Length: 166
Image (cartoon, rainbow, N blue to C red):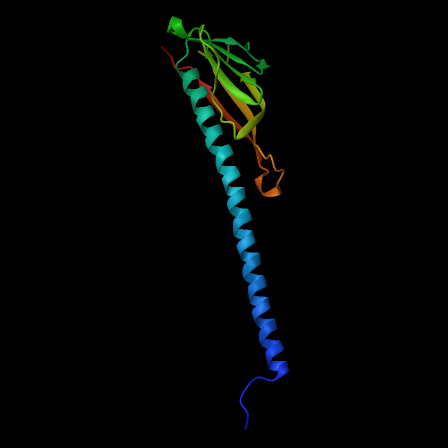
């Protein structure tokens, strides 16, 4: 009696192994694409969180809001600061980056080169007799030079900051 595989058994084993390998490859590709997407989401979120906190902390420490006027919105924010060297402090959008300019100093980018800011809007929602409240809206997307689907991510962020009473 001969021991071995028949041709049908051999083809069944090859088919099962091929199916397992294809499934494992698909799972591995999904993991890689998900990692790339999470990297893009994390980059956008961390950059925006840093920028929003910097703007909010500066607003909290300001003396007054120069612009936009009450009930108005603008793509730039000008604040009157207690320190004359930082007066005025201006936040704006230039070339896809949020910038801060303190006093006579030069503007410095707050966002990294890995993201682009497509919209920056400051709304003065203060009441006439209050120190001041600014609503910040920022739209950020990841830079995707290869135009790969897994790196596409864009999100709108909102926050509000009040000037502290002095």
